Length: 109
Image (tube, rainbow, N blue to C red):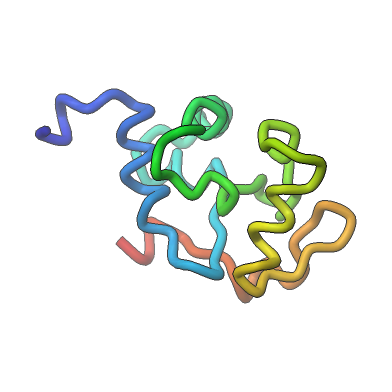
């Protein structure tokens, strides 16, 4: 499919699938990359709707590194467990040393 014919959610998924193992990005960083800087909330909606797709939604957090989408994952702590299994340290639902694991699609893609 040509990029111009993709829905906003599909464009979000294309970016999210490129987040490397052991790295995270934010809703806002994806929105900015897509030229829709004020659409971080829509990126969040896309992540919530991505379950069942091959999208690593657990790697998308808020700008402060908080696991704000964790309640959309099955289980009590699945989002945190997935991140920790990739070597990301999480304490009290917040990624530690966010700067070192942050992946910015505007710089990386």
